[in-house]
Image (cartoon, rainbow, N blue to C red; front, side, top):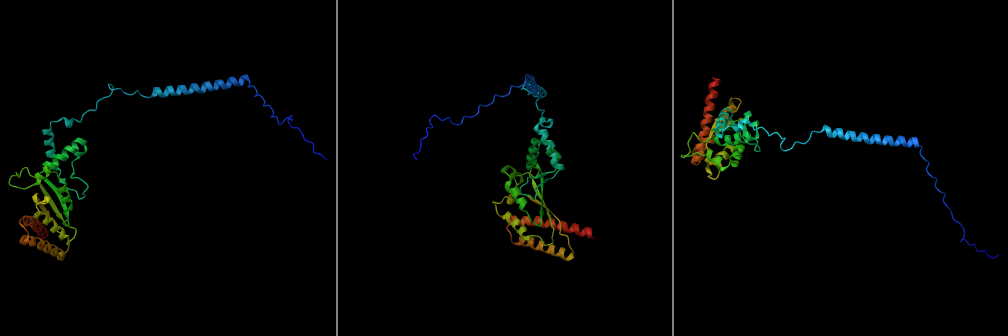
Length: 266
């Protein structure tokens, strides 16, 4: 049976249904929505105005109050230095054991103001008659670090010589403290060796010593004294003049400590 060709040119395809028109809003509901929007917008405007009113207006150049200078800094430099001299006299300047810290000044004046802090520290480093340090078990490393960090002007204040007046020169006073009856004698040797090398800063600096003795029983105390004497006596016989002179100073400090201890025990 022959197939019949179907003509689809005039066929009508799928037609979408026309969308329904939106329902008309009730006039009363529209008015309510509009009123709510207006009310919300009005509230935002009112809040913004209140926020602007609450903020203080930025002060202009003419409205700024100048910072009142610290009255102490208005004193003449000579008078400030006289006050610093009294502070340094009553509060010792101490070289700390921590290599990262600067000299310690115990006066509360140093914490008042940064400029005062800088002035009194500079004055103390240059003008303090005595700078103190403590060497535990003959460890002088922190003192050496302090010397190496000094400027030339500061170093000259510590130098000894015929052209330096005693009243204007500085002294580093080291207190020898011991935690054991067998301290590090090799550290004492290293310290004394520095005085024989002209390039080392310790060679040109004047030191004073205050000694204590290690605590312990009679045997430990005798051992301590014998070892100290042996180390220093060897220097007195064989060392060059400068380190020998320093060894004499240290030995004198130990002799004074020994006499004091023997006196208190009897």
